Image 1: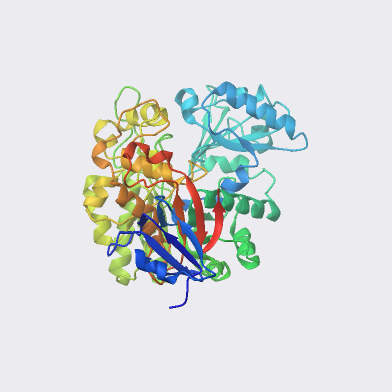
Image 2: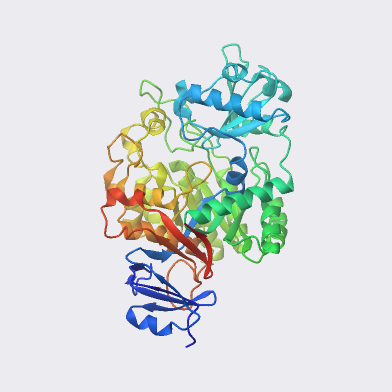
Length: 544
């Protein structure tokens, strides 16, 4: 064996390989791992070898994100950012400051505000008018399923009391029927379509800005969950293609092509053509994203039973299925036959069931083709459907940061689900016990892209930043090795990157070094860990 280019010694090394979960040394030749073991690995050290003495720091596979909007997140870093606070006064101060700093912007756009900041989760146009009365303003909330508009933006879009709600959304209204300034789901597009489109240069800059951030968090690969245009987000596909072509894309990226829910199977040939076009170097678009429902906080997540009202009585609303369930089975069967992976947004228990039913229909028609279909979010899963994940080979794509007590959960979700259904939320432990494969992601910019924070919540079921010390359904906690595997081997599996995600000879040297061994420390201190180094294919892409 030739001498190594890079050797890590004096581990610990977490391999995510069931055959050998722990080691102390690892060697890299070129872009691949040459050896994993102990003292014998040091025999590969030669005069040109770079030796990294871990001195007790943890080496593990590079983290991967199974559901992220990287270009959108990177672009939003340069817009009006309302994240990191829940104070209405803070929001207004930031909006005014951003508008003053960008006097030439025709529109003021941004994101990051939290529904918990406003009664019923509903901000008003008058609040925005008080700080920016002369230009249109459109600000997505942190989950990007709703947007806050001022009067000028609503006027530009021609929205009045007579404007009907779109089939896939809702215009919140004042007593006389006039738009109040809050737009839900598909209604966002009534205004967002007027916002000047980001340029190709903007999108590429957003991608590179995002990549730098994600590498700093130890992320070496991800699945972009929306290649297309929707809800004010412009299609990032060309940015990825450009970066893959010129070598500036250092991460490995799987793209999920957007399924236009206003259309049917006639779009499938276009998806086939886009898959061929958008596959170059480290970028490939082999997945299709179908958004089956909305979110629980605005009552658009599809549920098997109605939402409750403020008095605890059943309403007439069970949420929205954006794609007809019968048609969905046909679409998924066609996509599976063409060897597309299907990436479902399925948040409510009815949406989860509809997605699983579609996969069952595809298997009945096509047999098992191994396309690694996955369901993202899984906020509410009916207990009857838990065993179906393993039976159908459906991968559970979890966003662990959401599985914690916070005002949005405690005030805008649990009371309207009721105690029995609330206990079905984010059933990570139950999914594992039922034999499901877990992958993990962030949904950034909806929430933080930091895998360490997500792992902390998956293990502890509480937000490390929250004063509230209650554990969110503790029976659904994951042990730390399982949580680490979800962010490494599990997501590598869902991304089809079979030579990543675990540390074994022959695999790509996608690696991350943490500043401590989280496997031997107290679980409540996981979130304190920091990334010191990130490698992709043996190349250092981040260091502190």
